[in-house]
Length: 136
Length: 136
Length: 82
Length: 82
Image (tube, rainbow over all chains, first blue to last red; front, side, top):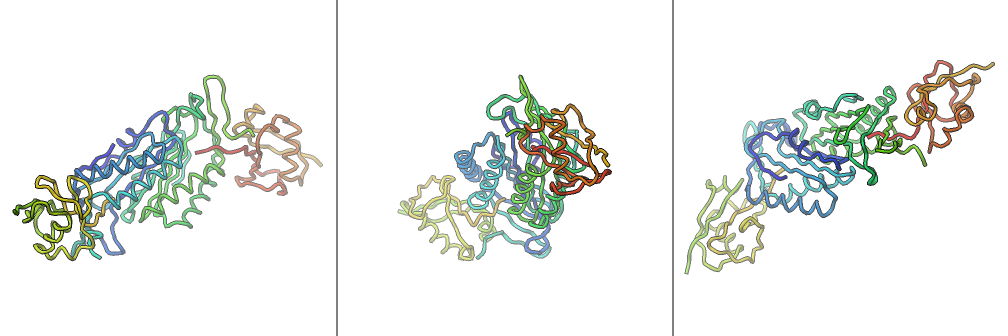
């Protein structure tokens, strides 16, 4: 299951979705809004997505992960809009029979999302704002 | 936070505990009771712990992880008693500023728990039962 | 013969142009690379961005790809999801 | 002079002996290794276990460690948590 949402991400619902009788391991990665970036205090983040393409790029990543590892169920949910400190920006959940694959697939997916999926993050500070990675 | 409990493990409560303003990444590993072991159908699992020592061995593992990685908060919760298919046997949650450490620490902890912590798992089948790892 | 294409803008490209989509005068049969050149002429501020890719119909496109007038075209500045 | 020590049993060791703790006749000044030998004599079924460690006061003990009468002693068969 892949989604982009403006609503808070519901970890319990994701867990329920992932469970199956064959699953022996579930790895969840949560990307969370923290209060600083390189020690500069952050007020909030604003995420923007090219929804259609972000979904299809996440689907490609999930399909590749499915080929590499024996995944039983997965969920990738990315939030957009304004996020406050402590809110979950992205959730990746992977259910597998054995634990190594759940870790490996989860990590592959978050690493690759950060490289290819058209979602943009603006850090808003007390005195300015920056689109992350935009400038050399 | 380290615990051994006879009650179902509450993932939402663990998440609340892990959150802090500095946390940018949270990795959760859940060990779940699956319906088979080496393709033999499992009816249920029974976990037994030497509580006092299990807690102190888990604390040693957490302390070692703390030395190796910049962990903001962690939680390790192991269930004991009778567990049905789909129930969570163990939860490890690691909050860090950046994601690599959350994955590495979480994986280190579950791998090491399986080697050193005095907790024992009995697989109960339709026609018999086995203490896992007990026999050559 | 000349026409125009519409280009969707996100993130920093939207901020730099002040628009979420722009219409760019563009020759039929032009490529993705030609479009990037035209955009840099029309919006010099785009040069400050570390890299600029183009998506056509929701897929990353090479600079040789030829554009058609009903393609959905989007500028993709460096992504920063997760 | 001879006395006895109490040994906590878990998992398969509890199943094989039918008890969650046993009292073992044991000389004062004896070691962990001596205790294991005595247990194997008293409960031959323990030989079927892949490995058998001893914890003293909640810590894994080497076989040379000398036991005291008020130690909390436990047999640790192969663990299988997680």
